[in-house]
Image (spheres, rainbow, N blue to C red):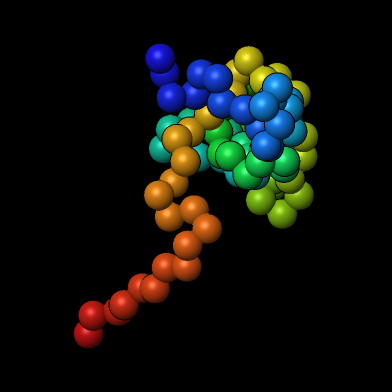
Amino acid sequence: MRYDEGIKCGTDEAGIAHEWLVLTTFLQGFCLVVKCAKCGRHGVVRDPSAAEWSNAIGAATRPYGWHDDARVKILPPSPFAGKALRCQVWG
């Protein structure tokens, strides 16, 4: 089983549909970065069209909805989610 199979949104056992928002683009991987507004999970949309890429350029300041669930690859949860991180600068 892949890590993104059977992931449910929210706490409802029946599962709630994700509400994806496009947050930004990722140039190195040529994909769109999305986040579920309900459960906070992140995902990516690989191989966006030229129009989708162009629309997503300004998403960092103006996120917008993404409605093609089949194209979203849900990422595994971060081990740092919900934890405060301290960075130390070495001089």
